[in-house]
Image (cartoon, rainbow, N blue to C red; front, side, top):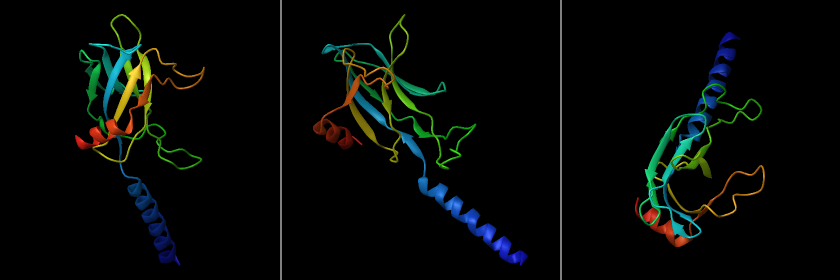
Length: 158
């Protein structure tokens, strides 16, 4: 009887461990982008990819054409305090944001960045500061995913 209970417990533990491993790590993608204001490049703007609720970030300055490149933050760790949603048992990760910081101004959230499964994933964004950021309560979206041709170029650079 005791051996049956032990075997059942080992089986359940093994299934849970396999399910956790099947999810695998999540990554913040690298970002290739262009930052403008009404179509004019925002040279020397400081653009950062931030892991919300932490000081973890990757930053770059836009060049004279407003272009910037942010390498991936690498593997993102689940939130520590309550890393699993008690209702769905899904692993919870911190939200990733693309932010703009200009001297003397507050940080502006530009775009929420989705975590990906691929370690070398890249996204290409076109960001314009006069683009409507969304309705009240929506996440800011000053950026749009670049057209397919640009996406193909970004993937070819991997």
